[in-house]
Length: 205
Image (cartoon, rainbow, N blue to C red; front, top):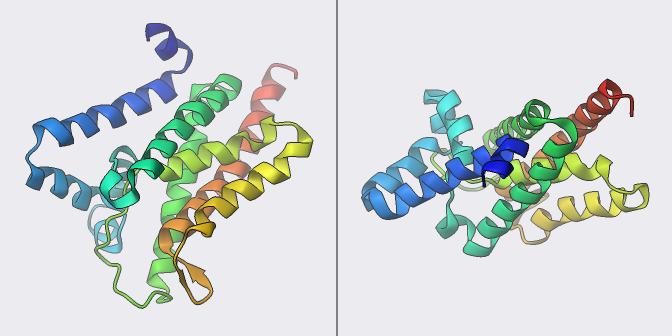
């Protein structure tokens, strides 16, 4: 465990924080307090207007297996473990952290803009939107440039198609969570390409 922290401090630290908060919410906090944490750190319009920094950053650390589904939550955590770990190994902790931060924040901003555009028939001002999904998809998008050239387009297509395939659609617009996941992939792809390029240039690769 200590070796993993030393070699992958961002990945290990992030997942440890996520797991720690999940354990507190499950076994220590009262049900009402756990629900309040989810509501308070959700990246909805109300929270972004009232406490944007806490909502944007805090939402990435709160698991919501009830709302997202246990399988989807587990897959997101595994994706973070593998994809962020690979990215961190290649570009270093600071660049890896920057990439997933750009992906997460970018996805939140895009999602907020789509929600505020009025394309959805219901009021989503107070919707609960938390979890590791944006970080996971950003990291997965970022490692696209590390794979064999022949596999990059299929991998990227899979990442984009996965959230859209199971999404509920409102006319031309998929549900906001799918929009956020696709945005995270694209932000991660662009930021990851820059990070890998700079990391490789720094060591003459």
